[in-house]
Image 1 (cartoon, rainbow, N blue to C red):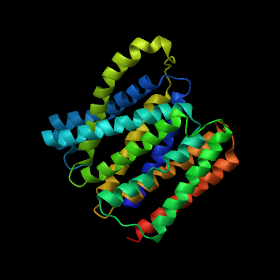
Image 2: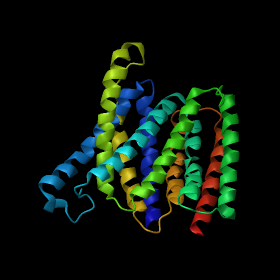
Image 3: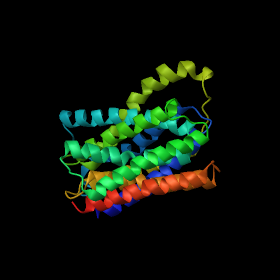
Length: 301
């Protein structure tokens, strides 16, 4: 069951990435990210209020949010810091890089997750997993070569650095999620980490962006902005539900979620008409082959 939940999460994340790219094109990053946390909080606010004031209404459903201890809030706050850091890096990278380039790189995040699972959770790589990792590494070198054709130097482009940092922090978040879902309620984690991110973004918006708003890219409202929060909430909900299964593997769940790169790549190819599609398509196929072998290897554990 957790496999199917992961695929639903991947489809939602693919639509989320597309909405994010559309919203960020020629737009200010910080306000878009702030509104993402704002709308994300609004989605979960009714569930928090109903669970607190009318607990009987939701008590035996997936949407009930039980009271949480100070220790639990501390754990969720740490997750919020990690996720928000990843989002900041990712939003800036998404704005400045082609979807057909950033998507396959982000799809390599499961490799980092698998290596983290190897060290932290004691997983051991089998032959299929090694094939998957080596194939993914090869694809990254080819992606870098595709980027050079568009004047993007991986060694000196700060947006590539931002994207890599996003992958690393995103992988850290995935590993931490597996730890949290061993004992915490899904809705508790998902609702409160949205609230904490919103409050973190308030000073960033008003102290860092607002005074400099006239010297940077102008903010423009786009109706795709609330859709970012909606599809992210759906994707994360099914993701967290998948991790609650005792036999779920974070390496496999993370790999399946990154199959959202298919949706992202198709949008970049057919809507944005991005360049060098043939070479990027081959790079993408290699990434997916690597993910497939990771799946095979993890399924044999």
